[in-house]
Image 1 (cartoon, rainbow, N blue to C red):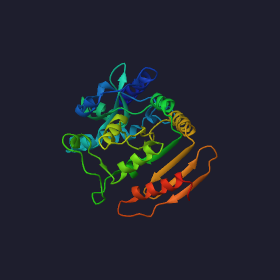
Image 2 (image 1 turned 120 degrees about the vertical axis):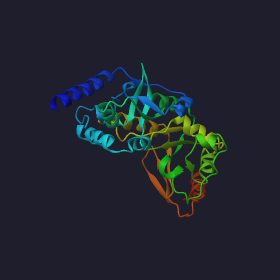
Image 3 (image 1 turned 90 degrees about the horizontal axis):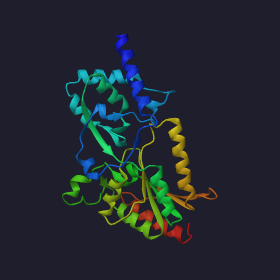
Image 4 (image 1 turned 180 degrees about the vertical axis):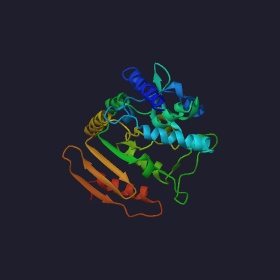
Length: 295
């Protein structure tokens, strides 16, 4: 048993070494992302920016073994895995880079599973952000959390009407009522709209979704919670460069609008009191007062 484990350890270490400095993410078309449901384990490569590949942290063989046992003993294995697909991004020169699910990928390899359910995405990367910052002529930005402020999973909360077929089948997230109107107000009053998410959303997916409501999204920054220390530091510097590109930032959520002067660091917290899903309308009123120099 120890020999098998050592061989597997060597295999994983070899895959990590092979990926570093060779594979990098490239864009994939939206149609391909919609149609792709499974991918071969041999087509996937460890992400050099993930903790899985960090020598100080490395793969957890305990977690891999736990997934292996779960896959082998749970008769509902396929259903379980379908609910938690491995998140991947198209890679150069071939295959896909794993964004989330390294340990499940390793466990699937261990039990000789040829293909597994996947979610193919195209994230916004540093070069994309730099291109946007170089072309924007705006000095103000608004920041919202895509998961907590923009989308809602609460069926009792007021939401925008779903898009008509076939778009309602493609864009399935429920948008909080009034959020498109808030985005429209922000863009027409000189703000770039940046969205942040702990999940993995393709920028063009979110951008095209809101275009269906006639509004614009400037950028979408997705998950960084599993990144290595070096990657997190690079991400911090990127966020700093975004902040420094604007004189003013509004952090907007259902409870408040936080106005920040990026040059001085001074801020003003404007609380929102609306209930029943009407906070986007109240936020518009607050931002109007901010624009007029009001409290």
